[in-house]
Length: 340
Ligand code: SAH
Ligand code: SF4
Image (cartoon, rainbow, N blue to C red; front, side, top):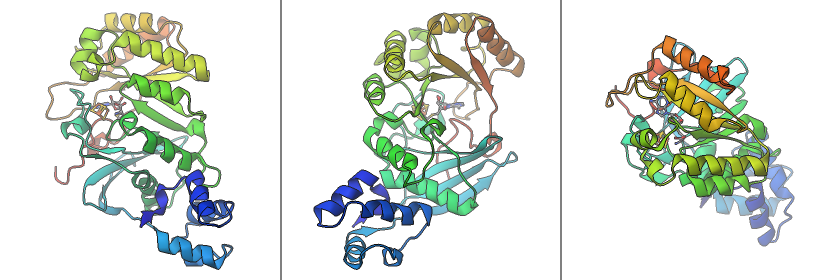
């Protein structure tokens, strides 16, 4: 039986139509599922009885089990969910002044293996299904009973290595009949898979794109991210420029600040030269320590100097406040562990 949370509005309409029912019922079904939070087809009273029976015979409501839950000093919540096949994944809810933002995991493990990231310590076991991403959202929303206003696809995994499922997930999150979060409140972050950046530029939705850059030249970037050997800096920047030309959207570059590795003023200068003229801004993140690696975060003064240097050289930037590091819920600390 299919998990109903795998269905986009379009795929549900198609299934229903093919089985001889009215396609528009899909909107009503979505309304019951995502607006009224009903988990029983029998209770969908405005749906014709035979269709309700058809749904109950063909679809089920999946469920994630909350394995553990931690709340940090800054109210960041980290959920360790057990999937139906018992793999564990993490989802993080951050309380910002502009609303609650949910960080979604897309894979069990990650094959990109960046040299600084805890998530990459575990090789990819499998992609998450659309339903497993949707259920992260529903699971956290039900647990907190709070409105989630933003979704960032930045948990464990490389979203563009699970492309179609991530696109379908975005479809459900964004659908006015579904979760209904505006495209501008949805961000997907990639380590820079060029063919998928091209594909993404052809998607109709105005979702934010973030690129994990972390270095402005190939020598350093390849050391940090071996994916750079496949998709080097200049080609990556070119594909981002093509994306901007097509979509007219501003792109975010993520840059983690690693002490004495990529945080010198000369690095800021090289970065600003690389990004000059591109419609973008740089999201600076002080590295969150991971015990298996020797990298250290830049000290605060250096991070601020780097930030100011970018501004001075005409590059828009933010120095991101780190959240949840006391419970290992910050960027790059997710590893789905059950013990400390
Ligand atoms: N795989 C995707 C999305 C998940 S990682 C990607 O790499 O973009 C989300 C962000 O956290 C990326 O920019 C990643 O480089 C960054 N990150 C990884 N480990 C980190 C760490 N220890 N401290 C701070 N940021 C980290
Ligand atoms: Fe994977 Fe992103 Fe971590 Fe790299 S930074 S290992 S791509 S999750």
